[in-house]
Length: 262
Image 1 (spheres, helix red, strand yellow):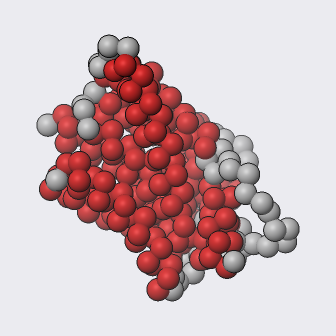
Image 2 (tube, helix red, strand yellow):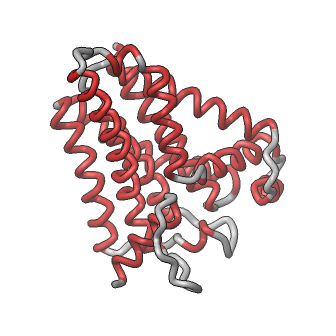
C-alpha cells in the first residue's frame, strides 16, 4: 500500500481527482516520483479530446477542423489543464511573479509569496505565460502529428516539480515544499523515469530524431527551471514547484512550436 499511497498523494496534490484522504497523513518525498504520472494523465486527457474531435470532424467530411479551430481549441486545452490541476500551479506562478519582481531581498520575497493577495506583477506573469501557452498550442494544432507534444509536454513539466523536490532545499521548514522534498531512492527514480520514457518514446516514434532531441531538451529544462526559480527566493516552496511546472511547460511547448514553424 505504500507505493499506492504515494501515487494517491501525488494525484491528490496536483489534480482535482477525488482521491481518498487518509486523515492526518501527509505526503512524503516519495510522492514526488509520481508527479510525471500526473502529467501523463493530463496529457492523455488532452490528447484523447483532440483525437475524438478530429475523428468526429473527419467522419463528417471535414479533416481540417483542428487546424481551422486552432485558437479556440488551444484556449480550451490550456483551460482544461488548469481546471484538472484546480489552478494550483497558476496560483504558485502568480505568487512567484509578485515575489520575483516585488521583493528587494529573499526574506521579503518569501513574505510576498506567503500573502494570499495577487499583485500586478503576479497578474502580468500569469497573463504572459497563459498567452504564450495558447499561442504555442495553437501553432502545434495547425501541424498534423505535432499534437503528440501536447501529450508529452505535461510529463516533462511535472518532472520539473520532481527535480525541485529531489534536488532543492526548502525555503521554509514547513509547508508543501518541505513536505515533499528529499533525496529519491532507486524505486522512485525508476518510477519517474518510466513516465519520462513513455513521453519521450511517443515523441521519438512520431517525429524521429527531432522528437528525441526535443525530449532531451525538455529534460534539461525541467532540471534547470526549478533551480533558477528557487535561487530568487532562497529555496523551494510549493509556489516554486507550481511555477516551475508552468514555466517548463511554456518553454518546451515553445520549442516544439518553433520546430514546426521552422
